[in-house]
Length: 260
Image (cartoon, rainbow, N blue to C red; front, side, top):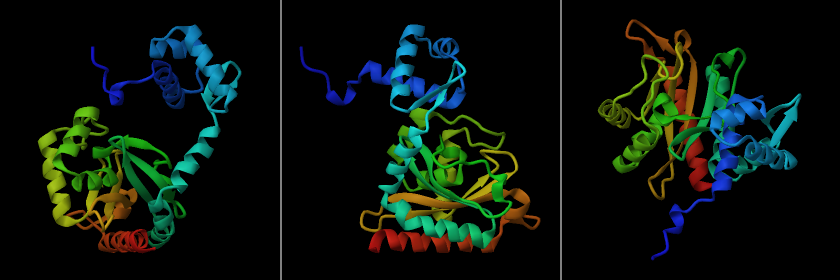
């Protein structure tokens, strides 16, 4: 009997621990009995995993409830600092937020999801509820869509097959062909618009950042805010000054990433 491909071999106990971490992150604070029921795992097994994670600071316990531990902040900060695009783009995201007086973001793709590496807010721009480190569906967001637009067709198909096209609002794209049509328009225009597809009332615009050596998209920068502050006119077009600001800051970040 031949050995199975190591790439398709997984350690069940590690998968169980990660399932527990993900559920506690989403549902916590939560008791062990409720958690065991939700993930369909023996209470004794869940308890042992929780105690082990707690020992290392990845789970916190208070009043018989478990929540995510602050050790993840340290671990996440290491992962972020080691990405060259974070170092290259952070200052430009801050400047962008100040220029347009809205929330600005730097995002990448990981495991088929959009991840926010950095967020900068200006004044009352807290209208947007996106948080640093947030993973969400690519097709819901401007950053996610602009990243998808510059991936191969096979990679986009793989992501859709893995995560599906669930809806967040009535305006979310939920059809594969509609998504590919939208991605073609994004490539033609050079920007992606999120038109209340993730959250009602919120509009965003994103511009890609490329590795000019390989031609691959590595990240995207976006601005988001309430519809009435982002769009204008009867046609409700994105304000041109916002588009230009995002493009300019993305261009500078791309230059730094590729040449410094």
